[in-house]
Length: 300
Image 1 (cartoon, rainbow, N blue to C red):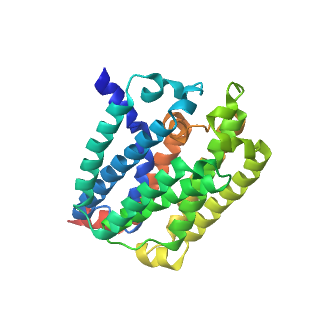
Image 2: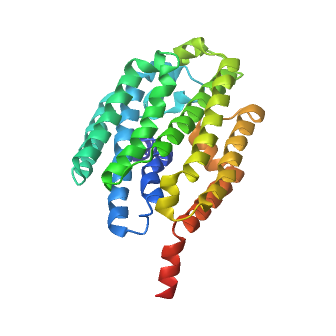
């Protein structure tokens, strides 16, 4: 039972965010390069490790505010199922594994992991209480995942990919703030997340409109950019844009009509239309990007 609580402390459900590490290898056309893919998998696991380390530190820092939250009070530390001492020992164990994995890759990946860890510690200690800057720090975490995945396999990152990552991560972060504001139960509200005092639902909706628009425009422009066309030898990637638009619209629907969004991971893993849409986007993208390689394999 204690082992399960320690695993819960790592928040494995949140590891889905680290799939951003695979963005660079997918759009670099190297997904079938198994040597690079192996390095990318190591990078993914390392990011899972470092993100879990930051979650442990965050839970130790936020133990009192979590106890005042209607859902977070059931977390291992807040509920008392895991003591602070046990959490600290477990943190050291996970940190050592993460460092060993990081050392298997190059220096630039190590710098990305270190930067990710430092900005998350800074976020937990101070920035999460600073309006607007808090969501930008969340966005920076996603950018470092993309950059780290690219660094691990030594491929360049497209400027359009960075811009798309910025906007979609801001969209998810602002959606989370809106969902937190929209919660009907306000018991101990001021103790749960102080920064919410500086937000309003109308304000978050305006920011979300900008972030959603930026995501769609940047992704669409990336698909028709000269670099994308020259890399993939086709201009057909534009046909994946409708999946991105639908995904954004569906997420907005869930926020406004179903009052979801407080946990982006939960939304992405439980909403069937979003899951199906993501699978279709991935399959179509792979077919377009790797069409020539698939044909070569068939001819072989």
